[in-house]
Length: 446
Image 1 (cartoon, rainbow, N blue to C red):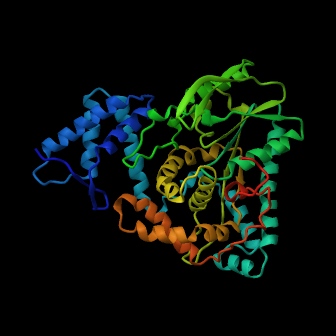
Image 2 (cartoon, one colour):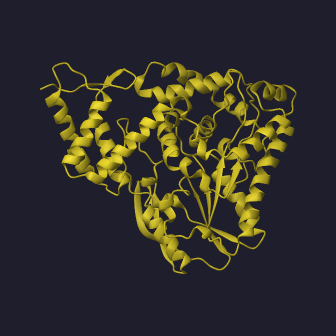
Image 3 (cartoon, rainbow, N blue to C red):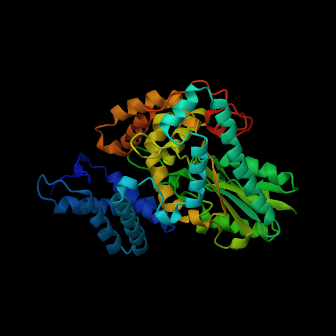
């Protein structure tokens, strides 16, 4: 019998075999169908490893596909049909993503908000910031203050339009969702929408979805000890739906409290009841995810989707990627508010992006309006703050097969930074700007 120590990745590289990856894959599939039995996942993983070692020839190194085939076999033979189905579906989705690897950070064509993109592109061209070269010209001419003023005005117009759309449906809207991928600017936008509605006599009552996390010990983690908080299955979706349903029935509910220091959830913690002219506000990654509001009529919901839809063409003909902008935003915010080293944020980002592509982007076309949070001036600021780090990561992870995703992103951003001027002084950024959510120094408390 062969003792398994290595595995061949899809790119042909050979890396150390870690049974925890199999355990986490099985547990992740179980979580997707409502199961949270880690011991069962470990037992099933052990069966997979045993089968591998029994069937391998001496010195044979298995590949990923071989291991995944055995996982499906073991799940089905152990009567775990639902888990097997979830695992197969996840595997198929990953295969589809690999098939379009060159465009993997773009949303599916059916979910691209073309009218909004044309509007943003038209604005960028008219303000002469649609290419890296034209942006540099604005910087060198000393036009950043005027550019910031114009950019913030465009964002404010989007927010005001969203608030007016809510007011147009004030007789039926019961819950407003501020939805968007990580670091898209949801928190600032939530505050600003609330300010607009308050002027018309409406009060937004925030339901903090973070308190619906399951206990940390119930989350899967990878071989690096990194937890996946980005998936909707990290949240108690059934309880969110139940609490909302009861709130709209006029009942008092008790919201759980999640202690991030201990990783423990405390149920029935905080009382909540709705009064007249109060609208529930939910700022969440997964506000478009159907399970969260399965029993709430669609006409009661208003969904605002936010994304930094920057239209900046680079010298290679590609456009700056929105996911890279959000990665840099999150690095700065995590370092400031969570004491995370930016490296941790980079290494975790594959979870963030994978969940977005599976659980957020597919539902984008159900949004009622779209807000663009991108500011053309933000990349020069991020270069000054993070440029050296990206250059270092691009070299450090270049030949590390376990960190290929991190290297790809770091290398791409590093190359983009080579053609953008850095701006050290960010004092021209307004205190109420959405960008202050990430670089600090704003008037809002986050």
